[in-house]
Amino acid sequence: MRKRVFSGTRPTGRQHIGNYLGALQNYVELQEEYDCIYCIVDIHALTTLEDTDKLQENIYEMMLDWLAVGLDPQRSILFIQSHVPEVMELYTLLSMVTPLNWLLRVPTFKEKARLQPHNVNYGLVGYPVLMTADIVLYKAEVVPVGEDQLPHLELAREIARRFNSLFGHVFPEPQAKLTPFPLVLGLDGVQKMSKSYNNDIEMAATPQQILERVMTAVTDPARRYRSDSGHPEVCNVFQLQQSFNPLRAEEISTACRSANIGCVDCKELLAQGISSALEPFREKRGALAAKPHYIEEALSNGAGRAEAIARETLGEVKEKMGLVWASRLDLP
Ligand code: ADP
Image 1: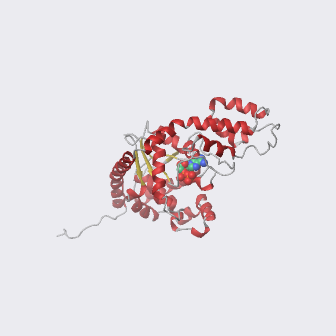
Image 2: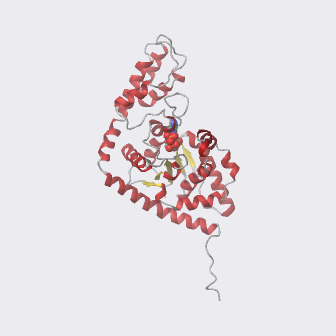
Image 3: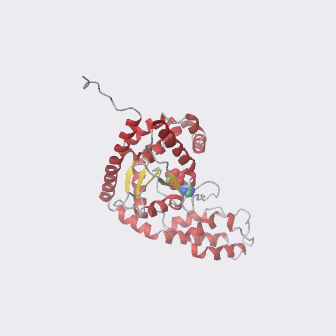
């Protein structure tokens, strides 16, 4: 039997090139060797969203991105988290075996509590438990994610291990799978690229939009004048050149060091590289946008296939936890 892969992304909007380089690339590649399950985690989105007006639109946009980048609903299960409600039951059950101090020390919890002090909700603390439930409900062994998710995955393994040792073996311990580019910095050159920090470039952006966004990128801070020699190894823009202009990266690096090329020229090259790398994606996305039936069918078929697996695991969990009702009516 092929091993199972699971990963989820919050539908906070369109996917950006950080999502692509850090996770989506692997989502697509792993389809060759594994049974893959990819989930649009709408319940997770509620931990930070106060306004849900755009939630359904975001889900749709994200699904367009996923299909256009090469996720194949014939091979992989693609579905929306809340459409398979078993995950919420497992989340509750796993919360009983998760010590609160494990959750309070998670760096992303501390960061989110800092960013939204007016909304430090219970779901925010439980985020890694829900993520664990997502993964282990499908007994996934491999989880393609970006580097920022590693602490969550470590916790998922600890929760699975604790459940197994308390109630008997049910869950494999899931391992992270990183891409060669597991942490893409945002255009500010400081924080990770993220929709929430407004420092991202959307995969679906037009060539003009890509150029405008790239032009705002912070480069090597030590290079103040065109005649200064640059330091590509610390430059955010150069990092992206390695992915989007791999064949010219060496040449760009030499030209930057010798001040033969300025930051504006370098950014223009990067914008061209991103635009042409994503051209087939943009075309496919445009064609898919005209086929809403196809998208809805893929999601509903995905939810059906996911639910069949989910029910089986949940039955096993309830039995191990002693939740199967022992009727006395049949006793003599
Ligand atoms: P965002 O932070 O933009 O809301 P998500 O948290 O929904 O993105 O992340 C979806 C997937 O993309 C996760 O596996 C995450 O690790 C990965 N990812 C997100 N941002 C980056 C980044 N800047 N670099 C590498 N991977 C990333």
